[in-house]
Amino acid sequence: LEMKRIVDILKDDPSMVEITVKGWVRSFRNDRFIAINDGSTIKNLQAVIDPEKIDQAVRDQITVASAVAVTGNLVESEGKGQRVELQANSVEILATADSEEVAKTILSPKRHKLDTLREQAHLRVRTNTFGAVMRVRAALSFAIHKYFQEKGFYQAHTPIITGSDAEGAGEMFRISTLDTKNPPLTEEGEIDYSKDFFGKETNLTVSGQLEAETYAMGLGQVYTFGPTFRAENSNTSRHLAEFWMIEPEVAFNDLDANMDLAEDFIKEVIKYTIEQCADDLEFLEQRLVNEDKLKPQAERSPMPLREKLEFVLKNNFKRVSYTEAIDILKNSKPNKKKKFNYVIEEWGADLQSEHERYLVEKHFKCPVILFDYPAKIKAFYMRLNDDHKTVRAMDILFPGIGEIVGGSQREERYDVLKQKMDDMGIPEEELWWYLEMRKFGSVVHSGFGLGFERLVMFVTGMGNVRDVIPYPRTPGNAEF
Ligand code: 4AD
Ligand code: MG
Image (cartoon, rainbow, N blue to C red; front, side):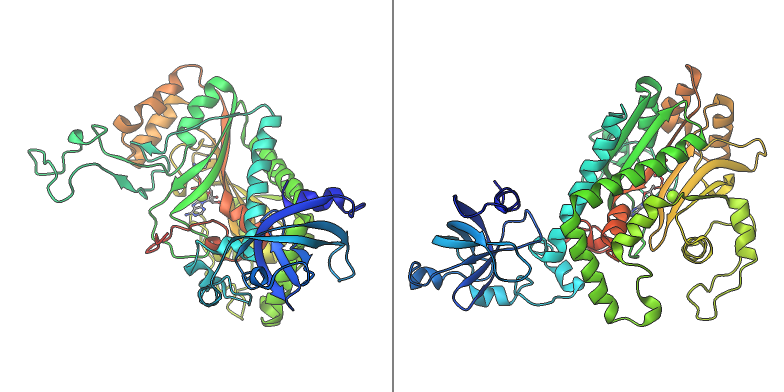
C-alpha cells in the first residue's frame, strides 16, 4: 500500500501493526527525524529514529533524496501538522544520494524559482509544488473520462498523423521520412511527397474534431482525449506546441445543448477534483498566498484558490453574443493603469486576449460564454446562421486564463459547407471524406475542444502553462 492509504487506514488505531514504508527522504533532522515521501500525498510521513536501534553507518546514509524503507509502528504524534508518525524499528537504505550532488539541484530543500525547476524538468516532480500539480492533473484526467463514460459517451481514438488541417490555420508540424538533404523531386522541382512513407504529405494533428464528427455520426456521443500539436510561434504563458485536448462531439446537439454540456462538464470535473485533491489544493492555495505576499496589491489573486473554484461551481456562466460583447467593449473606458489598455474594435474583428480579460475579469466577473462570432474569423466547419454573417461558434473564457474552450455547432448542409470550403480556400481533395459525410444522413451536431493544460492551470492556480505539463514543448524548447 502507498503511504497515504496506510496512514488513512491506521490513523485511528495506529500502534499495533508493524508497517514498512518505502519512499524518498525529503529531510533528516537532528539525526532523528526523517521526512519521507512516496509520491502518494503532499504530506510527508515523519519517521522517528532511536539512535540506539539504528547503526551510525546507516544513519550516515540517510541523506536528502536517498531512498529508504522504514519499518516500524505508527504512533500518535506530538509534533504539530501530523496526527501520526512512524517509530522506526529498522531502516534500510534502498539507494543513496550524494549530498554535494543534491545541493546542486532543485532537490536541495530550499525555495527554488519556477524557472529553475523548468531547467530540471526531470527532477521537478519530486518537489512539493510539482507533486501537487501532477496529482491534480491526474485526478482531472480521470474525472474527464469518468464524466463522459458515465454519460454514455464512447472514447474515439483519432489519428495523430493526418493529411488534413482541421482548423485550416496552417499551423502544422510536417512529418516526413524523406531524406531532407537529398529529397526526391517532382518534374516541377518540388519535394515529391508521393515517395514518402505515407505516399503523401502528412502532419501532426491540430485537432481530432473532424474525425470525431464522423464517429459521432455513427456512435452518437463520442469524445477524444489526446495530444494535439500547433506550430504557432507563440511564446506566451498559455500556449504550448504540444498540448492535450478533450473534444466531445454529439449528434443532434445544437449550440445551446453544446453550451449546456460544456458548462456541466467543466463544473463536474472541478467538483470531483476538489473532493479528491483536498490536501494538494490546500498546499497550492497556501503557495499562492505566499507568492502574493511578494507582489504589489494590484497583482494579487482576487480570491483564494478554493474560493475561486467554488465560485465557478456556484454561478452560471454568462452567455453573451459576440455582437453584445463588442457593444460592451465599445462602451468601456480604457484603463489608465494600462492593464486593460485595449483599442476598442469594430464589429468583425477578432477579440484579443485583453478584450477577453476585460469581459471576464472586469465586466462580468465570472466565466463567460461568447457565441455567434463573425464567420470570417472562425473555422470553415462552423454552422452559418441565417444572417449569413455569423456562425454558431462559442468560446468559453475563464478568469486568469482567457479562452479555455472553443467549440461550435457544425455545418451539416452539404452545399453550404462546400461553398464555405471553396470561399475559404480549403482543399477539397484533402477533406473530401469530411464533405462526403454530409451526403448520408447528415444531422445537426456540435462539439467543443477543452485545452487540458488551461484547465489544470485554472484548478492549480499555476500562472504558466509550462508548469502544468511534465515536459513542455514551446518554441526553442525540447531539451527533455
Ligand atoms: O479553439 P481551438 O483551436 O478549437 C479546436 O481545435 C476545435 N477543433 C475544437 C472543437 O470544436 N472540437 O482549441 C480548443 C482549445 C482552446 O480553447 C484552448 O483551450 C486550447 O484548445 N488550445 C491550446 N492550449 C495550449 N496551447 C495551445 N497552443 C492551444 N491552442 C488551443
Ligand atoms: Mg479557439
